[in-house]
Amino acid sequence: MERWSNSDSAEASSSQLDKGLDILELLVSSGHALGLGEIGARVGGPKATVHRLIRTLQSRGYVAQDPRSTRYSAGLRCFELGSRWAQNLDLRAVAAPHLAELNLETEETVHLAVYEHGDVVYIDKIESRLAVVAKSYVGRRCPAACVATGRALLAFQPREEIAEVLARPLPAYTPDSVTEPGELEALLARIRHDGVGVNHGSFRTGVGGVAAPIRDHTGGVIASVGLCLPELRFGPDRFDVLRERTVQAATTISAAMGGPTELVTDGTGRAVAMSAEVPGDPSAPR
Image 1 (cartoon, rainbow, N blue to C red):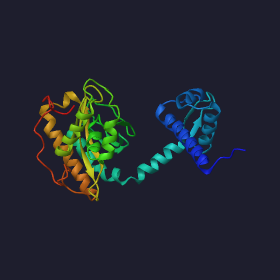
Image 2: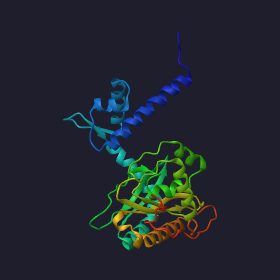
Image 3: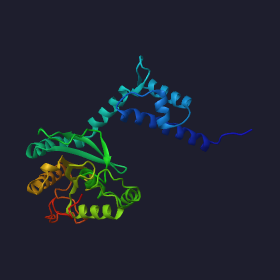
Image 4: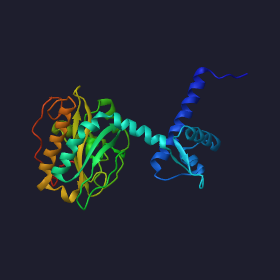
């Protein structure tokens, strides 16, 4: 008679947990309610197993079901946990007045972002009040290699993490996306020297940005602050000012977090002279 070992049981439990999290992440990111069949097709696995996992999540408040359509969506418990996480993240509270000041000075959309597994996640933002803006959302996840806030974070990750990102395919979201590992590696080296990340239409055509890293009391990079704006307002006439204001916000937030007051650069622990290149220069980062 065949018996399961403890390792078999642990592996099965882990697989079920992965599947349950796949379902939850799908419902949170879909933006609309989904039927059981659609959920099963998206996450894979037997329909009965998917239904059982949904019912478990539903009993805990993580999934809600519309009684009329019988379709499923993320439940209130997801919002509750997200709100508690946000409240406990002191970084947002510390950075808030400095984000507001940067927004007031530049009139552009300001992002506060953190790094996670090759992506950048926006944890706070103040939108521009101008008529033409680059839309974004708190909680949105973008590839770190493509946006300024993400590049400012990826450049200062451990070597192993950078190597892992470089080993993955680099999709072409726009004609200006960086798709070659060697090019991205050189771009990150430049960011470590200059202390700022720049993006010119690499993720969304016509949308650019500039960002700088934030450090805490350990000196480690924990977040980035950046501007996101239409390229039509990101020309040579404004680039230096926007970069300087962004760097000032990053170093001020770092100081408020107990970190160094200098811009983090290539291991020197002090600011270095930043490149004088402007967006119109062919060698400027994309």
